[in-house]
Length: 159
Image (cartoon, rainbow, N blue to C red):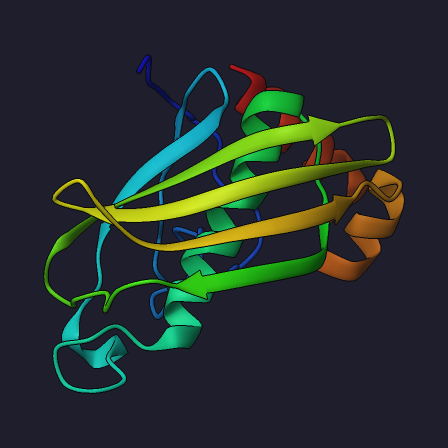
């Protein structure tokens, strides 16, 4: 799998990917042919049961990698319309996870993405999500980030 780190940093304070959010996951992504991937070790303070990742954190990882798969493959920003998450095996804390997003289908208005979490080659969780592509001005308004800054972000993400 070919990987190239995406150099762009989200300009807001996103819990999943912003390097400026000291309480967030601070995920960084690498481009693949189909979307993107990242690795992450979930700290114990994000557990549900001791030693197991909280289900909300699992869903966040899957949603975040899906969003970045769209950025990496389509150079677009999208909004999650629906996500179906399947928790297949317990996701341990304090162990490296491989989180991958793959764009399955897309057109000018929407996309579908599959996201997965593996550890030691074992599939632990997966999600299928549908995304819409509103105007960039709409996303800028929702994110409270100037539209020009979002254009700059997409240019940086395109590499």
